[in-house]
Image 1 (cartoon, rainbow, N blue to C red):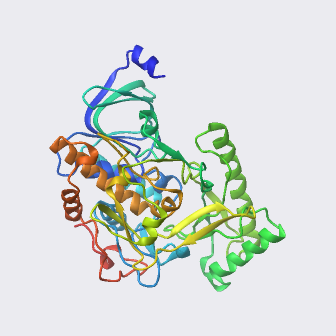
Image 2 (cartoon, helix red, strand yellow):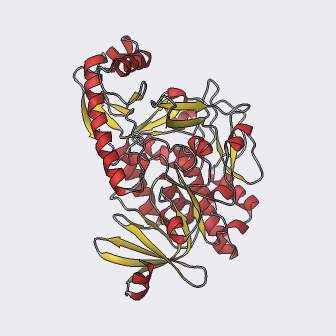
Image 3 (cartoon, rainbow, N blue to C red):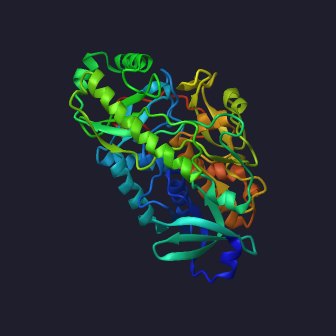
Length: 461
């Protein structure tokens, strides 16, 4: 394909200083960080018709802002706080304490979040294109990347001095020749999930009947006795910002490669099949759900891992469990290893392993820099990590923090005319702290009452 684009006249769409590919939560934050207090031009390109990636396509809860357990600490801040503050202005968030062992979740209205992302991006002057897909990368002289995109206007080319790959599948890195591990090569890839939402749920009746404990018991019974063809013994269903509605992470689709279109197609079909079997189960077996109905499925099946780029540093399980915060750490994580996988008995369940000691570890800058990179960063679920470490550090608060670090690092590399790996990490950390990022273990326990983000937590003014 590269030969074709070399020989074909492709119109130049733009020349920019920083190009961010993928407007998921990490990509949006990367663009916002790069344009903040900077005169450099920034472009954000997204293949779907709305921003947010997993945050708006399939989920409604930010995890990773807080450590789990009975003494939660807030360990993420900066531009991610700004996003939550905007949602709080319209009462489109609430806090769910220590949900399903993952820590306090910031539950939000995903439809409102689309508008929040749009507004923050467009008000900053970021060049913003939706419905635009990366199809190829051509190396240019003078350390510039030439990216070929396609949209309804046809093919076009963007030349960029710095590139942040936030595509989720490391599409730019793969096309550019950076090395990566394909999920499933060494350990089984985490399962995919089609999330769904239901309306007309009587939450009071549900809680009186035993709530989540009762639900788990009945899921296990349905699975073991095959009264309903559920793929697993457990799954989550939680209330939403919209009254009388719940959202789930219950369906499990395993043994498909999300980078092979025929297998991804089969996964989508299987995911939808499972969701309506869950609807039948909820209506038949769960008090409060008798008159409920599915009102929406995730925009696409949720993919947890595909390519994971090899970076200048590779986050490992030992890094996570050792709990060390080094001089090169640019974000913190306290999320447990949460591995959605198929067990030895063939059942799809979730494996948990918590971070010992302080329950917090630092994530080194090198995890977002592809090995031997001069002008490229990689953020989101395709960052440099082993399977186990990825299962801990893939929460959206952490991927947003990766974007925040990459955006500032890209600008520093331009200002100092240096390679991605050669930036001044101490200066980067100072800039992150100035934005509000948290890089040291907090002394205080966070107030994670149900409501009141601004009242309970430090936030950007």
